Length: 128
Image (cartoon, rainbow, N blue to C red; front, top):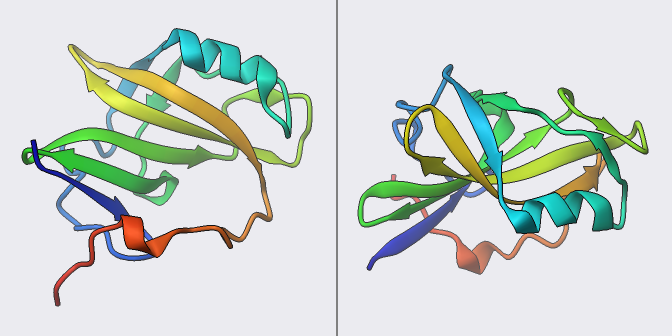
């Protein structure tokens, strides 16, 4: 099994998300994700999104395994309710049969987080 991880700050192939972009998917939350909404260090979720419309500007990470998208991460600033108004919701989702996405995990980040901890060595580099 061959996997490559891409990040928008390092390089994300433009055609990678074509099938997902602009489409609306029902969200199916894992047990882990359901617990994470209650245990996050920044906020507690009051209402989680039931659907996700995939927009290019929300996607920041994509994993490709054997030529297929195996997961991607999105950062949302709306469409949910949390105990703090100054947080974004991060969802890590995987394709699921039908018009669904499986939410593997989630967490909150502060709006002004500047990604100082990004480990660039984990990501594939695009060749120009």
